[in-house]
Length: 284
Image (cartoon, rainbow, N blue to C red; front, side):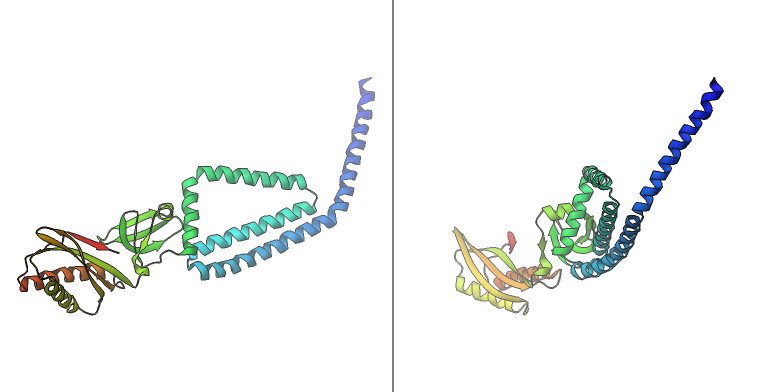
């Protein structure tokens, strides 16, 4: 009894398998033109992606002047071009569900990575923004995050500057992007204000003339000299001396302010005007 049904079952399953393979072969033959077209789309898309990478690199390098930024942007555009070609190929093969699943998977992965590397992505985006806006360049003297120094290196994640004390400080780009930046190198000149006090018995016209003469003898780097009497506190009179200086040299401000204070102190002493002090220095 058993020996009789086994051959019948084998014949039945063989017929089913043969029929299934035959239908698959027919479907494969019908899909062959689509498969060839999809392969051509992927191949052409890959070539176009390489061309996009080269062009985007050269264009971005002209704009950002940063090799690292240009490389990242070109790779991102190349990847997008390749993904687009694969999406078109899957659509040609009538695999719409696979396309939807692929896009959903990419979105979920991107969201997870965004939460996991939130600080890193923030620094990266800030670095890209600063590379295109270029609020400063290598060699500029800036003040940011309570540090004053010269920019040494600009990267996608962080910026390195050398302080006036000779220290190398690495600041995340996110912190630079979110806080004010003072770029001293972008200004051709800089205003200096020196506050003094004079005795109320001083001949103010004589004092003003003496101060003007002392500052003019320093050199041509000082311009737009102005005097402001800001108050009377018996027995003293408050005086603010304001002038502009050349800002091309990193240490020009400190040097000229130093020379100005010495010159004013000396000239007032020669005119037998009471010794003065410089309690506060301001810049604008």
